[in-house]
Image (cartoon, rainbow, N blue to C red):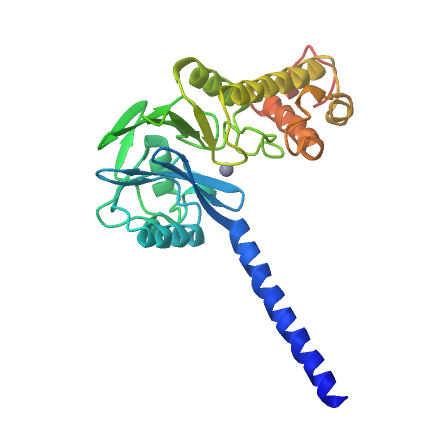
Length: 299
Ligand SMILES: [Zn+2]
């Protein structure tokens, strides 16, 4: 009986160990993943964040390092795969939840490229990442072997110096934060310039031809997905503006605005009231609705 009990304890321990091991594997698998999405373009996933890397005949191009831990993970993967040295690292914008860890991911010979406003802010705020070597203000094309990447600034939209990337010949568009497909924009739109997001997204749709979109968050998608997202932003912005012009307070706006056409977007139920609050605040901060003498409501 005693032996039998000991056996049971041992079996239970082994089962526990095995389940712990498989659990940690599952957690790891959920945290980091790498997929070859098209031709020489890869998407790196770290939790809710994505960045892109590109393999070319002349070297590897990486984008946002995301965090110290993510940078270590990607660096180890690139070494394991015996890929060519990292020639360029692009920062999408200045926000530290995307650019931290650049000194870990990059190599001595890597050239770091970002928009001038992002580079200035990263240096000024002593962001925990590698400083930028090359800046631009409107447009920059980086060639590497038969691959080219067009970096374009479309004006303010989220943070500072946030740009779009068009990778050719794969024809992949990559944008972080100000285009999000398959999911609602983040909570109360902290750090967003909503009219800027709308203008930048319109400019991208009007000037860029692409087959596949990769975002810094949420899903990959097509031109139609981006059009749906733009439709959401414009509909939301307009609904809140019209509501405020009609004298509605924030709770009244949050109770009355329903945008069911967009209920397919992830986090619709959870974040719609936050998104409404974000637009409401922006109409106060950017358009001074609180100083409107033609409106009776106190915002
Ligand atoms: Zn982000």
